[in-house]
Amino acid sequence: MPAYTFFTDARLGDCGTGGLMHLPRYYEMIHGVIENWFEEALDWPMGQMQGSDHLGLVTVDLTTEFPAPSRLGDRLAWKLSVRDIGRSSMRLRISADTGGDARVRATLTLVLVETRAVRSRRWPDAIRARAEDFMLAPPPDAAGSAD
Image (cartoon, rainbow, N blue to C red; front, side, top):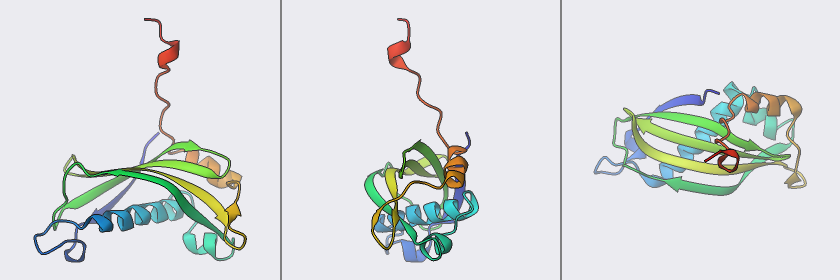
C-alpha cells in the first residue's frame, strides 16, 4: 500500500546558526506528520479526537535514526506507513528524505487512550479500516521458504 506523504521545509527557526536542523525539531515534525495523517487520511482531526471524542494518543515507544543532517532550505519529503495495528495500539514507520537522501527514520508505537480516565481504548472500526490502507506489506516468511 502507498505511504502517506507530507512535505515540510527546514526553516530558519528549525536550524541553528550553522544552518543545520536542530534534532528536537524532527520530533515536532514527526508529530506534525501524524497529526496531518489523522486529519487528512483518517478523517479524524485531533481537535475532534481530543475534544468531543475525549480520546488522545500516547507514544509508548520511539526509536529514531539520523543518517544525515538536514540543512536550512531543505525540502523534507515525509512518508508514514503502518507496520501493525493492535486493539488499541498502532506501530508506525515514519521517514524523511531530501532529494532521495535519508534524513530521519522513526519507528513508534501509539496507543489510543481515553483522556478522562487515561486508559487504553479500542480503535474505532472506521479509523482502523482507513489506517489499514497504509499498512506495509508483510515481510516474506523466512520460516516458510524452501532452501
